[in-house]
Length: 422
View 1 (tube, rainbow, N blue to C red):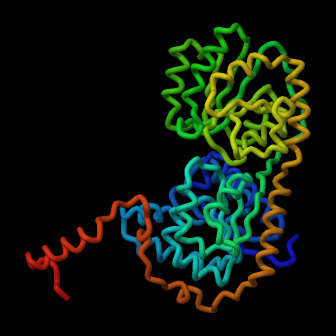
View 2: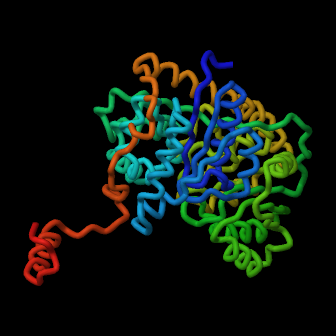
View 3: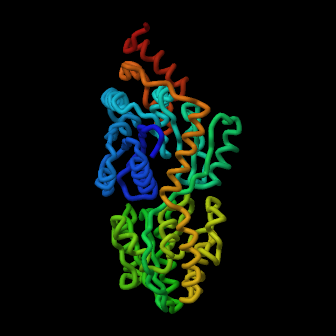
């Protein structure tokens, strides 16, 4: 139990969806409430999704700020969502505000974040190690409004420090994800290799449409295998069509989204978790697989924790730009080798618990508070937050006319009499 009950506010675009960030938020929400804190979860783009009930079951309170995204994109007036946010924040009066790669919110609400920082600690978390520096550039707008930066892999922290060498006042930590996996018996590996994919069915990042030709090659080599694909996304129909065209539908099952208790069972029934991603953070599905003894066969990314991903011991790694080699890796996995690697994977994965992750965040919070104690929230919190700001001011996605075009338009408008000269 924490020494003093906190009020935590966790913010994400779509917290009730079905990805790794959503699972991270759910885990942190549950652990924080078990530690005696009150927790609110705010959705800034979509307040629906299959995991919504799971959040409610933790005892969390849910805030619907989904109008924010449309206001940020200049698709609707800002006043309504600004009023709702201020009313909610004044009622909640958070002592910790956690931004989870939520750049549009952080950019659009930067003036509000600067004001809130007097009364609450603000963390920003990187959940992926994207190939470009765009995600770092986005943070320039609100860098002065945060206290600490965390990441689910060390490579992001190194890159962040190179990008912002003068951000010495920020505490930066690598805090690995954690999972909850029950201790149960595994299904023994045999001559039929049982492959599993868990994640969004998208081509960008996940490269899911590269999977059918790889499976076709595996089939042509005479390898006995089956595959279960768990998840949903915009590429589902294209994936199903390509699998059927290549004669693979009798070997491959698409389940769609599955709730956590059903998904966990599959890790124990499959030999290998397949991950073809072009970039990741510390994949939640890979961690769950490790803890269940389902051997990850992953792309060899810079973001991997090398104390965890020991090629040939706890996993198999494939060069990120040579996916064809994935087929050779699968083909070489014998039942004996799988049993040996499964034990190592399970011993490794069980170090990464949800409670361990939460306690690392709590240690970071204690450290930041020691350097920057909070002011008490004002009696009239609504009045304190009555700021007038343009949610779209620094939006990189909105095209803005060049200043000379604005000047020319103004001069022309005055000439036509459509612009007030005052």
